[in-house]
Image: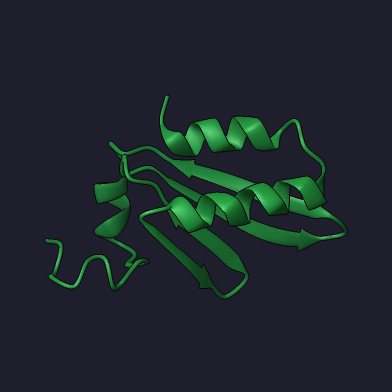
Length: 89
């Protein structure tokens, strides 16, 4: 299981405040952490990514991108600019 999937699974057991604390702690240990508009993006050292977005009313959505799929995403979208200075083609 990827680190992003593990984090997502851990978050299911927590309330919003505890979840935010866990996200911020994981962000400190991550390969890269960025806030893009209303979304927090965490890239883990295994290449997996979590994207968290606040939808209001205490609802936070969580997306998980597996290490296998991250290159497909990078063809269309370029988060983590400092991590990928060279062009991914």
